[in-house]
Image (cartoon, rainbow over all chains, first blue to last red; front, side, top):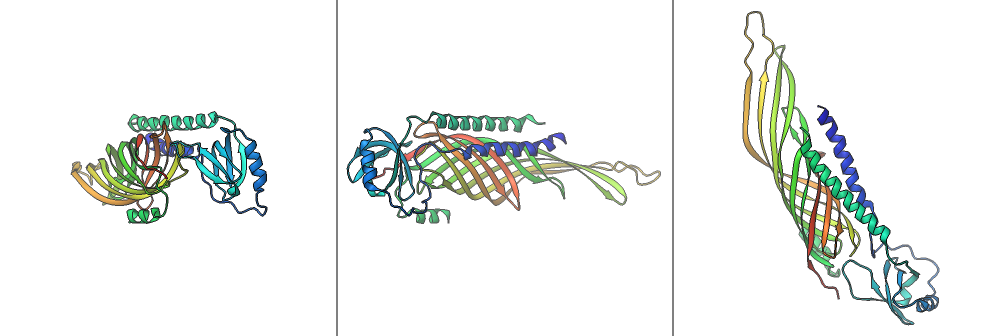
Length: 141
Length: 213
């Protein structure tokens, strides 16, 4: 009887813990729901002059007027466009971005060790709890 | 229906980064079964092994086919009834195992990242094999001088029932490298409420890479 009483709370606890990693934030570029357009249009010339001042090879985070946000490495800058090599799991071709579509460009600190550790910890916790769950399934009499 | 709707949705979208994936998992399986005429209970000493194959229609929509089975688990029940003012104690021991094929539709969050949470839902085709044994005992005599009724043993031989149920799942894929990932999910089968709960973890690989222009 005690075992039966313990099983359900244990199952619920493990379920909640295993779902928790799914709430972790993702690494790399992601697309977000378009935000409402701002009333003030981005100053294309100002953005262009700013991006030109950044060294080629800089890691940047670009926000587009559509609301999408991209992370990548700056490959080429002209008056009309920026070519960005996105940071992604599977390498993709460099992506040209028209200057008019860029709302903001922010330099990004190199490396994302914290996130990598967080994801690793989430995976490790998931694996550990999964293993614990299987052991628990066979430990009860 | 899932295939048709997914294919239609994929029309006009760029080809996905990953075309297909395959995975295997092992997990803790809990299921609710009837034990006795008016009694349901959960058995939880079972493992569920599964193999998956998925096809990406877009970077976010995937159709997955799954085949799996759970190990044999025991369930015990104990009921008391009164028949002609005489108590009857019935103890039941049943054993269950399942085999299943499932098709589901997943929505995968984010694109081309190292960590992809997903949610999904689909249909489970479940073959449940069961056998049970009931022992009914009559502890008291019906009257002075009358003998105590002998115990009755009923054995229900192994049989297999087929059922179809919807299920939902939530989980994530976390990549070790470009193609190999760890998979973890929580799977709930529904039958007028949650009828099965499985927590699974496994390893998979993206088997075909699509090319983007």
